[in-house]
Image (cartoon, rainbow, N blue to C red; front, top):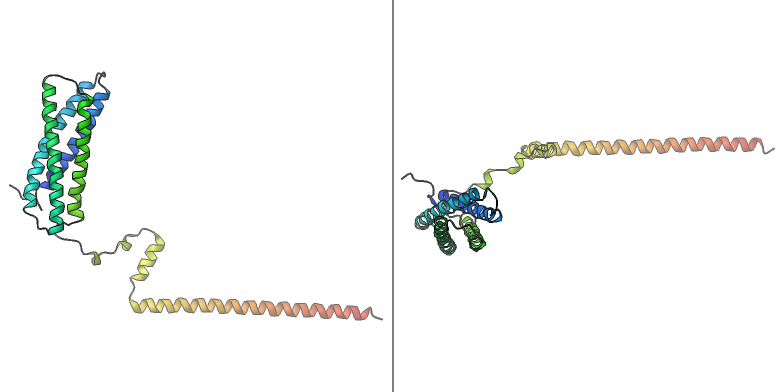
Length: 228
């Protein structure tokens, strides 16, 4: 058998989850359209997805058992693995019962009823919890992971598409000496601009003072002419 890293369980279990959820969906659609001309099409899709999905679930449980005995794990991850296993066994058992019930009903040509829809909805909820707990084994406990990424070897800021962020990133990637020279140059430009602004302000004030003094002198001269 072809070896899949880390094992066959992740490869099979996604089919089981998808097909069984589709089965539940079409069971609901069929019972809501029991008087429609398309009812038998909905019923066939619902039945076959339930039967095929149950087979995939049994295969996933079997592959999961091999996986639990092949991946390295510690005490906390072992407890999480056993919890996932218990949920998987209970969920698969319920779907097996529903698949047998569905097969018997189809043989006798009984229509789909809400009596079967409700257990299917419950089983789908259990399936969701089981899948969640299986995901936690990988993403929280790291089971079945061959190697973890080196987070120090990758910088997400380099992927920025914003112009300003790209400029900042380019500046941050400059050598330390170049950054120091760039900072000193920027400080010098700011100081020069500030000095120019101060000089312009002083010249403006001096010009205003001279104009005011001149105006005052002219006013005084005019008044002295009229004094006599």
